[in-house]
Length: 196
Image (tube, rainbow, N blue to C red):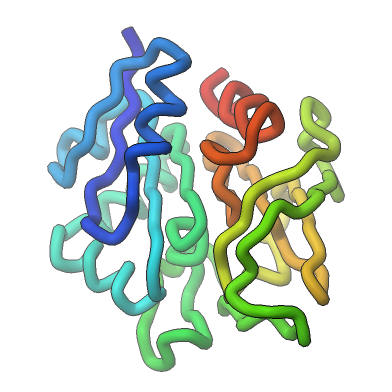
């Protein structure tokens, strides 16, 4: 049986993530053990909270290099919400704090007069790729976002006073600003695509 390992960072509520993968009939583990995370069939980097606290949690668990290696080795990896943001270099939320730097760019605060944090269902659409899910509704909980997806990636976008990257897929990496585990059939379809 294939296994999904959810990285334990103590900065995320992972019960809903765990339940989503258990519904697929997969063996779900929670771990901060670098070897398990590197060798697992599938790995999920969840996250809730601030950019600074997120990277501090990964540094404390000595997981930053392991996550970089896993993605460099093109092993199936899913990054959710703050987990997606941590893949980049910096974030306006935490000046001076360096992220994983797997992708170039900085996470910016949403430039909108609408209420923040953005806590709502929002329509998303495929800008390129994601032919199995060209559009749908996803659940968001954030105030900061990526405005430019990595080059040569498949991209989903959303709009909340401004356009932003809702998700991107690059080979075996799927990164979602929204919570696919809470996004109904649309999220389920994306997760199934990642697992396949």
